View: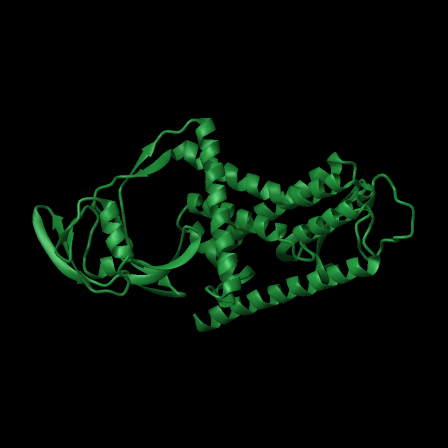
Length: 365
């Protein structure tokens, strides 16, 4: 049950607010909303209720949702009929773009609110720049494998102070982390102090890929964390820092997509609804705060993916609206249908692919 409830929060909340953004934007510029759905009701599967002129529903297929408005391209639209004031196609370029991008803006707003709330409640963390261990992670996940962390395997504990690596004295956490990060898969001798005793052992930092300055780089990790102090933040500072965190996550996801296209990241690393249920459930078991942080990251992900100029997504429709606004006329109907069809094929292919990845992981795991 916790897996289902956590999935509803992690996916349902960003999707609902995304569609609500479209809904409110449509109403603000006088576009008639015909349908508002969270989830896709393929083959008519789901719940629905009509209220006034709008049909509200929950589709059985959870990956997404949609807001259907009057005058937007679909099989029921007669392009030869006279444009009506409440139709999407009667609006100017700026009104169309406002409606099409409002869902993405709502996703970024959600993540900013979540980050800002916890920053205001907890404060802004600042690393205590001393080589003293705050936490030792017992297990690390590397390429879908869970193995014992190097730090745990040699008996490092909370409160231990690292004093030297390979006979080089370390005095700050930055010096310590730089040495470990720069030496993946390299056996090193490490010395630490515990209750006035000097202990030593050999340690092998594990190689992982990490985003640094927008690029994927191999670094070494051993599974230790520094101490932090929490600095109080005002409401304004919390909002600013929360927005900066949203931009940081946005940058990381953009780098991930770039890495996908240049081959640094495999499509096999992507996961779908089953993977999200598993991740959400595991995160929920660690606490409500990590669950909402995951929700914020999924929300940024949803916003970025939707604004890409891909046929069938919000960004693809924005691209068409821009072209029509520039040339001051509608594109031919055949071109629009062709773009929508390509978009549908791409989206369904991706959905099937990530679902296959999920099932493969379940079988292998």
